[in-house]
Length: 112
Length: 113
Image (tube, rainbow over all chains, first blue to last red; front, side):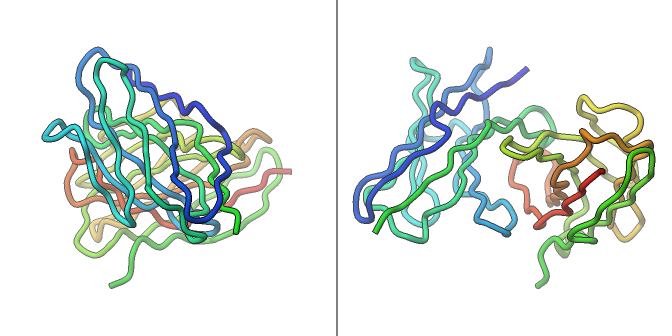
C-alpha cells in the first residue's frame, strides 16, 4: 500500500520569500503523486501531478515539485510566496482507480 | 458550470442516529468518491461509485454505505453514529477513473454528540 509522509505540520514564511513543503513517499513502484491545496472553507484543489513523464512538474499559481526516486521525495516549492498562498497543502499518492492516499497536511502561513 | 455540490453543509446528530449526506458531481463527471477528514488530519478514502456500483472501498466499517443514482449524484449513509464519526465528509468527482484528478466539494461537517 502507498503512504506519504509530510515532514512539517506547519511552515511559516515571509511574503516574497521561497516556499518549501516536504513530502516523502513509500512505494514499491513509481507512484502517481499529487499536491492538493485546501483554502479555508474551500474545496480541495489540485495543484500539480507527477505521472513519470518528467521529474520536474509545474503546477498552478507558480508552484512546482520535483520527483526524486533516489530520495523517495516529492517536495513542493515556489520561488516567492504570496499572501494568497496561505492554506493547507496535502501531498497525495494514488492507488489503483483514483483511490487517493493523503498525507497529514502542512499548514502554510505567509507573513507580511 | 457548477462544481461539486454537497448538502447539508453542517449538521449535528447524537450517538446511535443515522445520517445521509448528498453530493452532486461536476457536470459530465460519472465517478464519485467519498472521503472522511477528521480534524487535523488528511482525508481518508471511504469508497468510490461508478455506474451505480461501489467499485472500491477503504478501511471503513459496514455502517458506512452509499448509493449512486442514474444522474451520477450520490449519497453517503452512516448508521449507528459514534462520537468518532465527527468529521468533514468530502465528496469528489472525476471524469476518468485512473488519473487522480479529482474535483472536491466543500464538504459536509458532521458533529456527533
